[in-house]
Length: 355
Ligand code: NAD
Image (cartoon, rainbow, N blue to C red):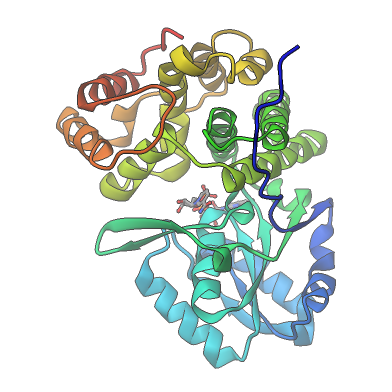
C-alpha cells in the first residue's frame, strides 16, 4: 500500500457557478456579495458581449470598460482604475479570457473592489491569486490574497465562439497548469486528483472540439477541465514550464497560449526523468510517455509545435536560457543554462521529446 504523504491543503479558491446560460445569474451573484454597481470589463473584441451583459444588469451596471489587453500593462490599468472610480462602481465583472481577468485583478488589488469573473477561455486565471503586470516591457508576477476573485461564473454557452485554434492552445495552457501541479513540491492529494481529472476532461474534449467546435457536451467538458486546472495552478507552486513561458512571453512578447502549447511536451518530457510516477495520470490520459504523448496529442489537434514559428531566433534562445536560470526555483529535475538551451532548441525545431 502506498502511504499518504504529509500535506497542507490550502482550500479551493472562489465560489463557482457552472452551467449553460449561467451568465443570467450575474445580478444575483453581485447581490450575494452585497454590491450595487458593477463595471463590466472586456477586450475590444468582446465589446458586444460586455454591452449585452451591462444591459442585462440594468441599474446594477456602472458601464463597460472594453480596454483589456494581453499581459496587463500598467498604463491600461491606470486608465481603468480612473474609469472605475468615476463610474461609482463597487465591483467589477470581468467577461473574457485571462487578459480581461488580469485587468479585473489589477483593479481589485488597487481599489478593494470585489470581482465576479465570467471566463470565456481555458486560461484558468480566475481561480488564482496570481497577477502578472507589465511595465516598460518587464512582466512582474506576484501572488496576493487581494488578487483572488470572489465569484466565478462558468457559462459554457459563452465558450462556443472560441475559435478552434485558441480552443486548442488555451486547452493546452490549462493542461500545463495540471501537469506542473502534479509534480509541485507543495502538491496535495485533492489538487492532484483535480489535475488528473482536468487532463482526462481535455483529452476527451479537445479532439471532439477540433471536429465540431459547437459540440455543447465537449465545450462543457473543456470548461470543467479549465476550472480544475485553474484550481491546480492556484493551489500549488509552478516550476520550469511556467517560468520558461513567463520568460518568453514577458521578454520576447510571444503569445501566451501558443507558447504554453509549444513548450509543454518539452518541459514535461524533461521533468519526466525525475517525476515520471507523479505524471502517470497525464500519461494514462494521453497514452504513452508524458512528453511524447503530449507532443503527439498537440500535433493531432493542429496546435503549433515549433518555437521558430513564433518568430524567435536561435540568438533569442541563448538569451532566454540565460534569463531562465538567473533566479533559481524548485523543479523536479535540476537544470542549468546548457540543459535549458538544449530544451529550447528541441522546442524551436519541434522535435518529439524522448520521454
Ligand atoms: P486572452 O484573454 O488574451 O484572449 C485572447 C483573445 O480571444 C482576445 O481577443 C479575447 O477577447 C478573445 N476571446 C476570449 N474568449 C473568447 C470567446 N469565447 N470567443 C471569442 N473570442 C474570445 O487570452 P488568454 O489566453 O485567455 O489569456 C492570456 C493572459 O492571461 C496572459 O496575459 C496571461 O499571462 C494571463 N494568465 C494569467 C493567469 C494567472 O493566474 N494570473 C493564468 C493564465 C493566464
